Image (cartoon, rainbow, N blue to C red):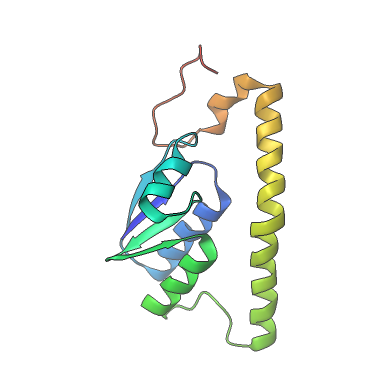
Length: 136
């Protein structure tokens, strides 16, 4: 399995954690944030991350990926069996993707617009090359 991510993305972090919980072997390809949309469109037909290749299957988006991982490896389960609890989890996932993610993205963009020197710290922990100080 190959997981395509960008640094500091909570949907990417969710999928990585799910892969660890499931005990599945995978390799991560970290994409530069400015180029990720282009790479993802070519590779997956959509601009968003995360994306994962499971054999010949390509899945994009944290919710579809989590469902694909459940189908591939049911144990340990990521989702509750109880229908009411499952509905709560699905609502929380939807809110995270549709509300929290957009708000977080806005905060990061505005923060970097107001403090471009913070760009270097934004990518801390990334496997990508460090951002040159003259660019930050």
